[in-house]
Amino acid sequence: MSRFKYLLAIIFLTIIGQTTPVLAQERVNIYFFYGQGCPHCGKEEEFLNKLEREKTDINIHLFEIYHDTDNANLLKDIGETLGVDVRGVPVTFIQDEYVGGFYNEEITGQQIIDKINKCKEGGCTNQIASIIKQEQNDNTNKLNNSEQNTTSNFSGATIGLGVLLLIIIGFGIYKIRKN
Image (cartoon, rainbow, N blue to C red; front, side, top):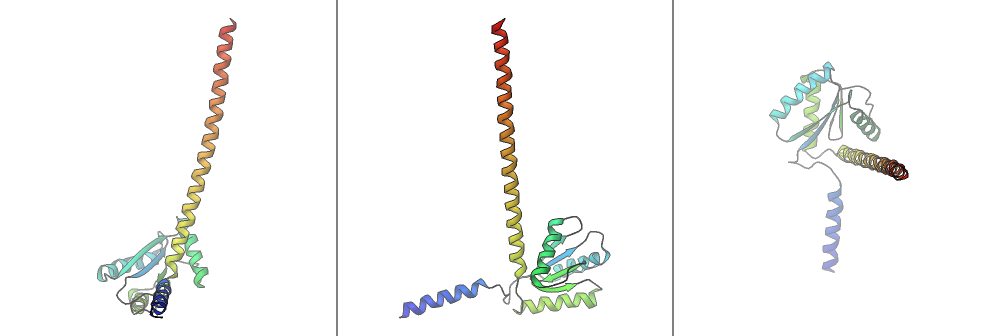
């Protein structure tokens, strides 16, 4: 029976390990979606850079959406998954905790710090990490399929060109022998 309890304990710990709440002492992920040239985004980026220098327990991930459609689609997917309206920038997620816009360090900056502290105490989940991983896998699959199609088209063109070349050479040899 003790083996059974031991096995149950391992299964329980494995299941608990599959959830992604942030435990104390872990680094907190900040996902910052911005647009190049957006003045509020620029203010928040300065704030986040300062915060990153002060706090060693955060990871800041930057996603520019004006010129990168993959990042814009990622933001849309995250918004749909978390049930958050993400129509404007800046948009910041501290783990799965949402902050929209940026007014100044005293107001919005403090909201960000409060959410970081909440996550450090173990009060946050991080679904965004798995959404990003899924998007990366989807993009890798699209790239691989695109490369396969390009290779197939290249191979077909190469074979066609080779056959045409053989026909021309054969016709040339035929003409030479006929004369």
